[in-house]
Length: 372
Figure (cartoon, one colour):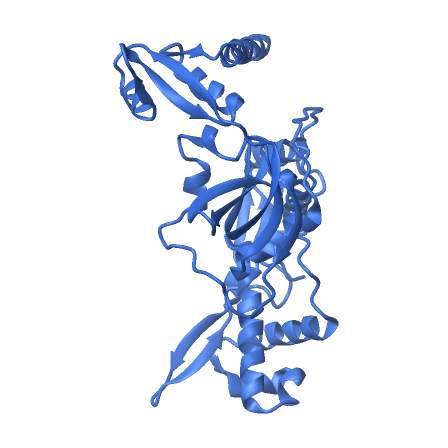
C-alpha cells in the first residue's frame, strides 16, 4: 500500500475533486515513474500512460506539465533531471522519497510481525523504530490537536495517525483524556477555497465584518497563507487596496470568490522574504486580525534582556520611563505574553486588560498547583 510522504506545501483538504480521468492519469504516471530506477524522458514515460497517447505532442506536454505541478503541490517529489549528451530532460520519482519508511516498535523485547520485514517489492525502503515513550508523546500530541475542536485539524491528525498505525501493532499507545479546547469553527468551503487560492496564487474577494468599525466591506486580497492562532483561523494576505499585509479571521468572511480569469496562471508572486511561520510567531501576535484596537499600557521592571526587548516593542509613555504603550487587538494573547515575564511586566491599563491578566494568572497558578 502506497503511503505518500507529507511535504510542507501540502494541498489543503476539501479541494475541488479531480475528475476520474485525471485521477487515472495521475495513477498511471506515478506507476510509470516508480517502476523506473533512473530518470526517464517524457517520450518513454508516455508509453505507459494511455491518456498521453491520444493527443498531439504539444497538448500532451502541457497536460503533463499541469499533472506534474499538481502532483508536486500534493507533496509528490517529482524531480526534473538533465540527461546525456546532447542533453535532454528526464523525470524521476525516488521510491524512498515517495514512500514512508516502514515503522516498528523498539524497546519492547519483541518485533512487531507486520513491520519486521517490508513486503516484497519494498525491501529498499527504510525502517524507522519508535521507542514506546516516543509513541506515547505522538499519541498525546494528536489528542491535543483533536482537543482544539477544529474539524479540519482533527481530520488531518486522524489521517496522520492512520498512516502511523498501518505498520505498528494494534496496542499503540492512546492517551485517555477528556481535555477540550474551545476553538472557532470555520466553514469548510471557505477554508478549501482559500487554501486553493494560496496554492494557485489567485486573487480572492470576500465580504468581511470588521469589528473595529462594525461594518461589512468587500475586500480583494492576495492570499499568502492560512494560520491557526489562538484557536482561530486567519488568512494572511496582502490587501490590494491599501498595499499592506493583513490578517483576516475566516469566521468573519462571507461570499468568498476567486478571480477566475486565466485560471492556469498565478495572479501575483509571494515575496521570497515572506515566512508564514515567522509571521504567525511574531512577537506582536496580539496585533493580528481586524478586531477593535485597544490601547494598553504596561509597566516593565528590572533590566534583564527579556525586559529590554519587550520594551522595544512598545511606544514610550511621557513621564514614565518604565512604561510602554501597545496597540492590541487580541487581549488574551497580549495578557499571556505579559505573564511570560514572570512579574517583570505588569499591565496598567485599561482595567479590562488588567482584570483579564490577573484572571489568567490565577487560572495558571491553579492549573499547576493542582498538578503538583
